[in-house]
Length: 190
Image (cartoon, rainbow, N blue to C red; front, side):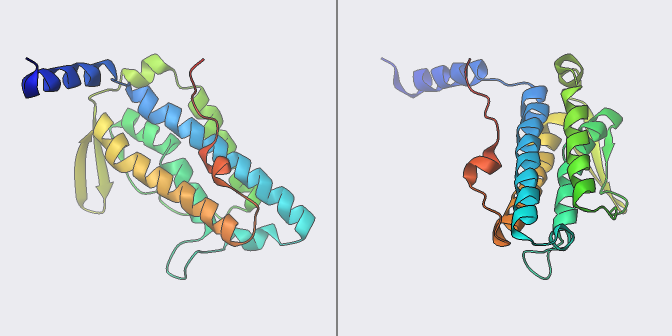
């Protein structure tokens, strides 16, 4: 009666029923966090206008001296979202070639632009990329992934790391942010 084989079989059925698409794990996740990043950048801008800190100094702020500044964190959020999707489309992904010298408003615009472009990505097109090979190239090193493996084990961890670091830098400087600012618009049942 039941036992492990039955439990495992029913667990497998549940797992299969919970399958999600490449679009769900990539674009939908990117959009949620890009919306949050856009929101906490708006809060930071308003806070600086009200409290007086210079937005320019925020752009070069680091959590720790050997970490890269807010500017890098925000460029990386874009690179590991829109850039990751473009990398899947092209079959290859590499670190960004250089760090653009953007001010705070320029970084906000870059986040907004990535969000707009990702909103234009169709579910059918993205899901059609499932199983595609993506090679991460860094110097002479080439690391092969499937599109799903790339998103789940490389792109999303980097994306969330840089978004959280940007949040942490602003929080450290005194911008009044909370967890809800980082989570963004959840995908609730409708």
